[in-house]
Image 1 (tube, rainbow, N blue to C red):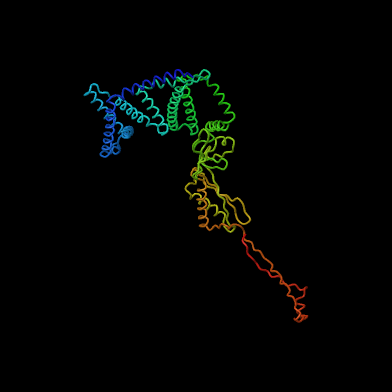
Image 2 (cartoon, rainbow, N blue to C red):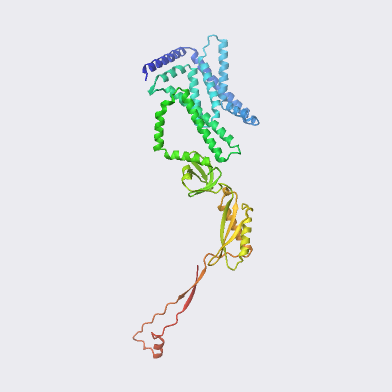
Length: 470
């Protein structure tokens, strides 16, 4: 680290700033220029308020082309600063015309700084990310301000004087700032270009959705890698000195990032073999839904209940996945029902087919089929097959519609649906009456009474029927 160079640069910078301040502070033109700047601010605010009250610029530009409308909105947003610059330019020109020795250094600095701020904000308006927008705007204006104040070279020299040498690489704060700024710009450009190419790729009907996503991901990775290589090379960084860091990254991938790399490779495999593509209806594990976005790490599955599951790509490789629309979007569904034995099975089958055809989402070709599957213990069992082409619109809802239509059709044809479970009749024996104890003051029973109540003579049991369901 070269501390002597840093000390010399800071000393020169402070000396220049001290001389400039001494020259300006001891001049009568300093308060004059400050007063003129304050007057320009008041005039700019007043003009902006007057224009805002009398002219509706939004309604005026409603029918303009989008590009002109965007420029007009940017100008309106910075109208106060623009008017401030115009007023200062007029004041400075008047002073330099009437007074030959007029000193307008502060006016020139205020005009330059405000103009740079307006231009930078208008140009960075194309960046929709607010954080990146503010960061780029502040960084660009800081560089412009240092250049306007003639401090850019001393500050750059001071930042470049501090250095740390790692192998053959000399790392300075200036190098870090330049590399970071260029990386942000190039990565933003690469991302914008990849998004444009991705949208263009989706317009090609000859490519399947999975191939479109795969090509888009490869283009994005290639552009990002190219941006990093170009920036590092342009900054004079030898890529061979990064071999140590690449080895460390490899060790990290081997130990701590196995799942991430596995999901990334699994995502590329899924896009390449086209086993799953956006728009497919799948069931994996306990999840059933429509495939949405296929990312580098996960695949989103919309379950139509307000939730969207982000399933790692590795699960689609290691688990059993049912793709309902892999080779065709034709899906067969089934409904089971029973009828009583006193109903005509032919009428039941006809009613089931008519019920399925009455539902709008059920396909006419192939036609629904109703089959008699078994003669059960208490009912005749049937199974109704029908096909749909839009499983993404739901499966349970179409089953419900078919069951409701089946209820109406069977009732209209006089076909009865049995109640669940058979009815059983259970007979329960009434308990025998217990003998009443004989008291001493009572007379002994007669022979006839003894014969009637003899233990050998058993009363006939009484049967009480009870009807219990099921």
